[in-house]
Image 1 (cartoon, rainbow, N blue to C red):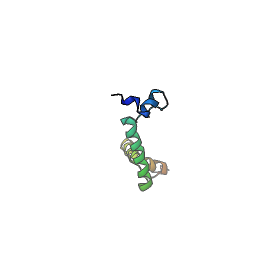
Image 2 (tube, helix red, strand yellow; image 1 turned 135 degrees about the horizontal axis):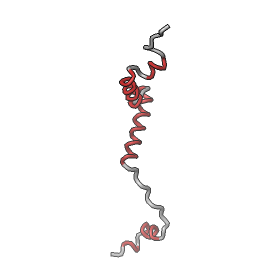
Image 3 (spheres, rainbow, N blue to C red; image 1 turned 60 degrees about the vertical axis):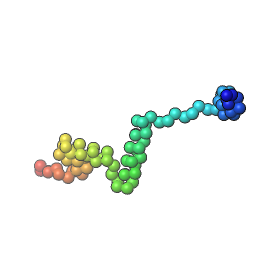
Length: 80
């Protein structure tokens, strides 16, 4: 066979002249990247991302009001 004797890439790798191959991102890293990319795109297009909606939905389920309603003071009756 002997192809390794005449293959310049194999010779360079054997002598340590080539850097190691970069590792591929893991599945979890790829999913996190796509999630961030999607959220950024939705923020640009819609102004709101799904995480904001879910945060408000869970907060509303717990308090009965969204965070925006609480910070704006809407829905709060004045006792005076």
